[in-house]
Amino acid sequence: MSERTNAIIAEIRRVICGKDAVILQALAGILSGGHVLIEDVPGVGKTTMALAFSRAMGLDYGRVQFTPDVLPSDITGFSVFDKTSQSMVYQPGSVFHNLFLADELNRASSRTQSALLEAMEEGQVTVDGNTYALPKPFTVFATQNPSGASGTSLLPDSQMDRFAIRISMGYPAPDAEKAMLEDRKDGNNPLNSVRCLCSATELLIMQEEVSRVFVSDEMLDYIIALVTKTRSHPDLERGASPRATLALTSMARSYAYLFHRNYVIPGDVQAVFGPVMGHRLMLTPEAEVSERRMMDITKEILKSIPAPKI
Image (cartoon, rainbow, N blue to C red; front, side, top):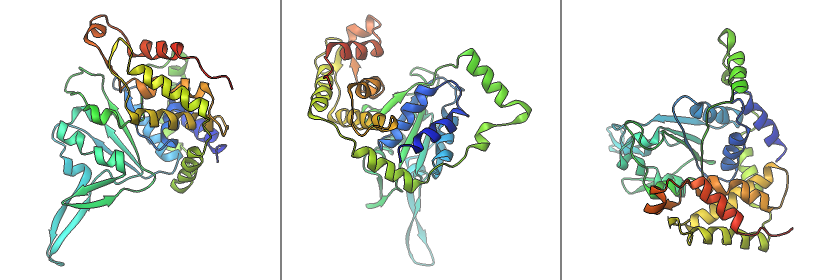
């Protein structure tokens, strides 16, 4: 099934111009069974990319535009009294989709943001003491504006840790932006012509295949050494959690799968280390004053730990 990923990537490229690395990272996140956080300024294609993935992969898609007045029950659902049956009947919330787009998640209240915690970790929601399973596969694509933007609040640390990766779209290069304009002349929208190249059932098969990608003891030791280094780095007040270790391993497996290998190499771990770790780590006050960048710190950690020779 890994050969199918080439066609999916090519289909997304028709919609998102000049962002091959971002497309690859997002697809790896889906294949790993994780959730994807896209942080960037408005208008760079975050929502468009989520829509393109849902159509190319045959996923049932739902979207909520988060604002301060969105309630937790809008996400998880609620129970109402049914006169016919004389009982409480559950009405599913907007999270009940294969791919749930939480648009501008950091504009919602903390209470509403936390409504996603159980769904993201356990694939279920609990309402009025009853637990309801979410459809499989289930992936959250969340977008957020940069911290400090008007009307935003910080996501809770517990929620940030539940995202497998955080990626940034960035502005397109001039040639990619020109290609975007040419693709949309005469009122055309490439998103409307995205072909469905697999089904939700086939995605589950791919995710199962990813979980069986071989990780040697040497590679496991390498992953552990990298994670441990985040916990002792002088510029980091908080290092990576065990959940981050699991996410790094799963994402490395996904990268190997995307390159049609059934085993993980150091390059797979290195390619995903920054996107997996960047949003989970916390700088010391001194590092913040010195305007240290998380990207630079993750690169330093990669350089400081020798990669195993395979």
